[in-house]
Amino acid sequence: MAEAVQENRVSTVLGRKLGGELLRLRTMAGLTQGQAAKAITASTGKVAKMESGWVPMREPDIRALCELYGVSEPEAVGALLELARIDRERRKAKGWWNNVPLSKNMREYVPLENAATSIKTWQVSFIPGLLQTVAYARSLRRVTVPDEHPDQAEEFVASRAARQQRLSGEAPLSLWAVIPEAALRIAGAEPDVFREQLTSLLDWGERPNVTIQVLPFSAGLAPGLAGSFNVISFAEPGSMDVVYAEVALSTAWVEGGDSAAQHVRLFEETAGRAFPEAESRAFISTLVKEL
Image (tube, rainbow, N blue to C red):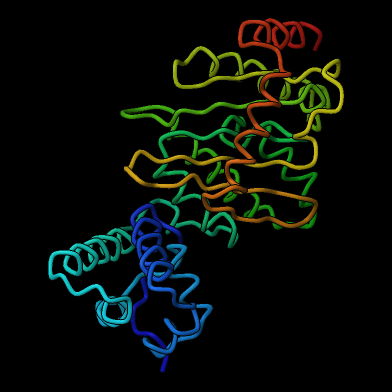
């Protein structure tokens, strides 16, 4: 029978926290995902998604898993049930992204971006999405998705603009962006559009919550050139970093652990080779004058 719960199938901060706790309890009990799946009459795939926070959790499943893992204290069980209840309620809440057509990857990514407190972003070829102007995003979309219907392209551009609101207002997102020199020189748009984009980078860089560095050609082959990625961090105690990586034509999610830590080190090493903020700002200003 299909599960009746219809909340958003996205990874949430509370969902990952709850899933991580269930994973810890299962590991301590010495049990496999297959054994957990049997206890709740589900597939191992569902258990994996539960432990990663990708699906909402029902009370009967949590009670069954607690019994299987030997968790009998009412307070401990109650805490897990309450966490699951709050997570289900938050998944039902409608953000702006629920009202616009987004790709599967973006439908998973945007709620995390909205809940994050900080993001480290490294983009190999383009200006990072959160820093793109409307005109630049529109021009870039025409080049990267040439067969897209104009209405769909405009919806995508509008979603980019909506995402940008996280960088302003109360409790704004902290963004640390490292941009390769190539992305600042390959216009992909009319000169006036690109001039506006570079000027916008200078404006964003004046905000205390936005750090922009330029990785110059002179830095040589930096380790980050293998692919673009974002490291997403959250304020909740015990929450793990989430990495959204883009390699060739595929994407991948990485949650905590050694791989996420490796991406953080990769970002920091790339940033270490980039111009400092002030020098990056001067470099971008020079490019604006050249256009």
